[in-house]
Image 1 (tube, one colour):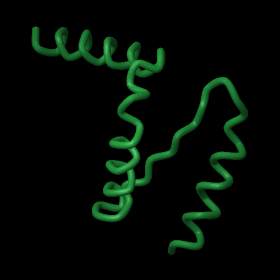
Image 2 (cartoon, rainbow, N blue to C red):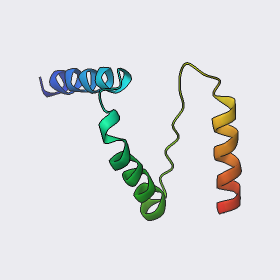
Image 3 (spheres, rainbow, N blue to C red):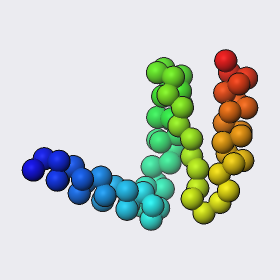
Length: 68
């Protein structure tokens, strides 16, 4: 029963995220992204599904190569 509600909540958040409803939160999300990279070593990559994904991945790995 709880899994069912989690699935519904996940789908709602996903739909809101893909429609741009969270654009007002972008500065906060960027701060969270920076904290994740600095404090816990988690890398978050933003990749659009409407554009080519090779360039963002190449930039990410080049940046990560310089970091380590």
